[in-house]
Length: 173
Image 1: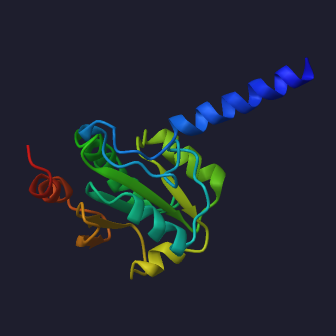
Image 2 (image 1 turned 180 degrees about the horizontal axis):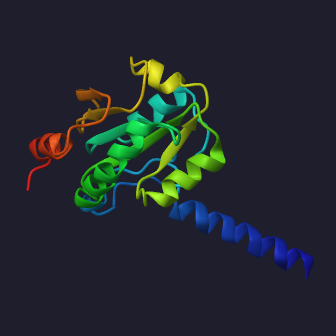
């Protein structure tokens, strides 16, 4: 009986690993996948700048919007509803990723939940990702094209409509 259980576990593990491969047979609308992309908006795994750069590389193939925020940041609170709406409008065409900096996880998760942020964020307790992107304060939003080239950046809150205008330029239809 113990041997049968071990065999069943082995077969299950093999089947699961076959299902999670990174083959190219996915649908074109599904876009790229990333092993580093957090599984939910409230997961908030801790990332350093090098790991974040790896994530951005894995996301090549579709535009990426990176928003640096903190739960205690007043301007972040003002702009996040617009970011959440843009993320919903461009779902499946643009990958949004948040970077929560110099924060605590409980207030950060409450922020994500209360503002209904639909995209994943990573946790950067020291601000290394923001600094690596070349900024000092927050909020910061950086737009990358599908090749991973930085095409636009905003230091401070994004003016209403500015992000959508840039995304319409990058994403046809």
